[in-house]
Length: 170
Image 1 (spheres, rainbow, N blue to C red):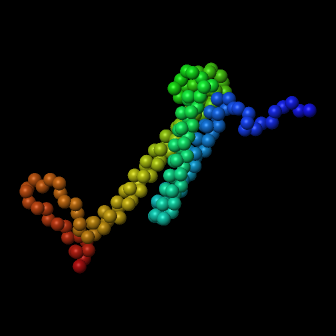
Image 2 (spheres, one colour):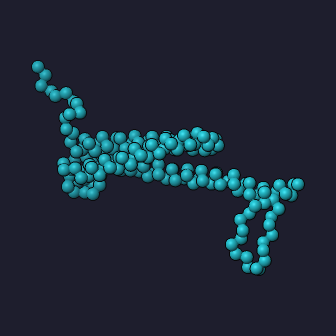
Image 3 (cartoon, helix red, strand yellow):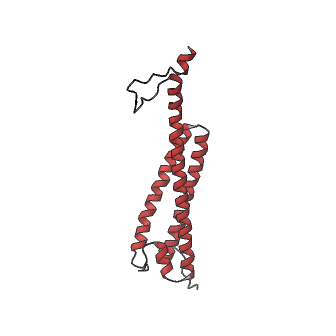
């Protein structure tokens, strides 16, 4: 007769095992967001706005998953079987002075860097999309001669309205 217990989900996991699972899952979410950003960037460059909208929907879902991961991290930090020293998962792992925990703490740092890089990429993409959406309006304003009024006019005279390329061509 085999005395070994089968590995199933009813066997309680240690705090370290739960943290390792959490880190793997958050890394997967970050990678998913990264892929969506890649797709969105390509669609933005290709000027395919309908596909960009689809990517945005996917991105919102992935970010929602990331927000749920924050709640899980907080539960891990407050867990009764968590090490008492430290305010972050990495600090708590390092406080045990075990090699496996130190490796997992390093993995936490790597995932944190991945998320920070993804955040920077998302911000840059947002700025790029914003300027691209404004570009069309700017071109039309230049072509029609519609310019924004000057904020300061030192001479007290009204600025001449520009005639615009369309008006000059006519």
